[in-house]
Figure 1 (tube, rainbow, N blue to C red):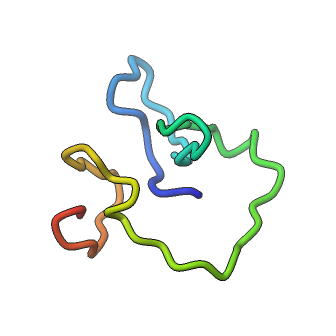
Figure 2: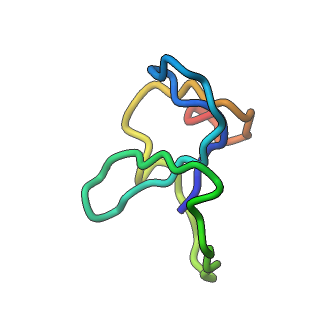
Length: 68
């Protein structure tokens, strides 16, 4: 699932990336947009508390309560 868009915080060269959550390895997977072939949308509820285990510093503002 994509959860943010923008440069990775530790990149020396700042380029925009789509940040996905890799559910298999439980970590962030930043991908440049040109590498994305397709995204499939599922009708499932998303709960940030299930994934966000760090202090968020998002590129794009959101309204997720303490996970914003």
